[in-house]
Image (cartoon, rainbow, N blue to C red):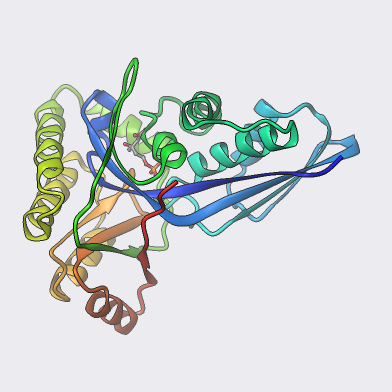
Amino acid sequence: MRAGRGVGHGKVLLFGEHAVVYGHPAIALAVDRCTEVTLTPIDGPTHVRSEHADPRVREAICRVLPDHGHQVEVETRLPVGRGMGSSAALAVALVRARADLERTSLGPSECYGAAMPIERAFHGNPSGVDVAVSAWGGCLWFRPGPPPERERLEPGEWQIVVLDSERTGNTAELVAQVAARRPSVDPVLERIGALTTQARAALRDPEALGELMSENQALLSQLGVCTPELNALVELARGAGALGAKLSGAGGGGIVISLVRDPGPVLSAAEQAGVPAFGCLPWVA
Ligand code: PMV
């Protein structure tokens, strides 16, 4: 029997992280970095070969596969635990690989439905935005349901440069930390939601979008999920001419995204400062 293969893409959150957990909208962009899962039928106990550094990978796989009969290989080009949706990408790759092994194919809705229980094994109570953008691709407007609101958006003439703090953030812990500060942070979450709605209308205006991104960053700082290292990366990007910059994902570590017309100056400034950085191309299904 032939092997089954599945791919799941990572993402950056342009706007709305944390607020999206409480029913506000978010805007996510699927990126050209992905996780690939290969399932090979074997006569023996299921075992996993993974370069994915997260120990919860095995638990996630156990939710989907019987404990006998599969060799599972996981390869990823996504930094793990840095806010780029590596767990959602794994979940999507896994359910697509299983479908491929069974010679069926999954549409994005079925893929979303099958991958969400796996994402819950990682994060407890995820909003679903990471799984949705990995399943549908592109630039996605998302508001949790039921049913979730989802719409493909058309981005303008801008690009994203990612700066990596090289520290991991624990999404479940950070979401719990914000939850513990409610209801006093509810007005901040509402302002993030309102700003995301404004950003949707400004997607083709890079200067306005950059401003809104930086406002979103200030609100994330008020939520308490930013760190001095992330603030320094925001400053580095702004100092090199980025139109806007913010942490992306749960925070507490992870990545900063910057909005640019030309990635060159931010990439050079990061290289000079010894900060790992890369440009992200959108992935469209
Ligand atoms: O850190 P990531 O890539 O898992 O993104 C988390 C985004 C949150 O809004 C903080 C949580 C969620 O479930 O939407």
